[in-house]
Length: 92
Image (cartoon, rainbow, N blue to C red; front, side, top):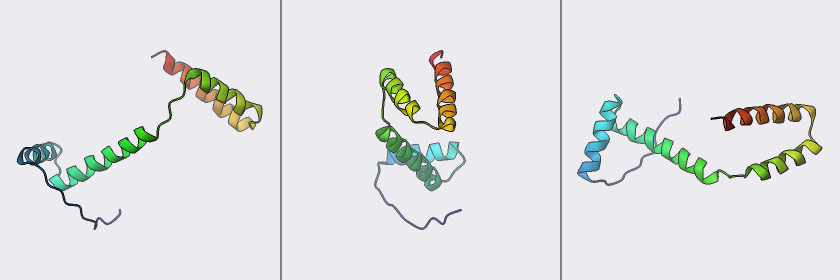
């Protein structure tokens, strides 16, 4: 477990403070622990969403074909598993 010793301070309205306290209580956490947890989760999600690259199905097929041309057998097996998984996701 890492030691938490860095500090952050910010101002917020009384309404926001009350909302955070209520949510923290609902989760059986201190306000500090709750705010830290949701802030870190939101930061990770934001970074994930902003670094996510969307690829069309047509471009993905091109990428697969290019990769298959010089791929190792292990890579091809993984690629086939991914294609199978992807086809099961299209059904949902």
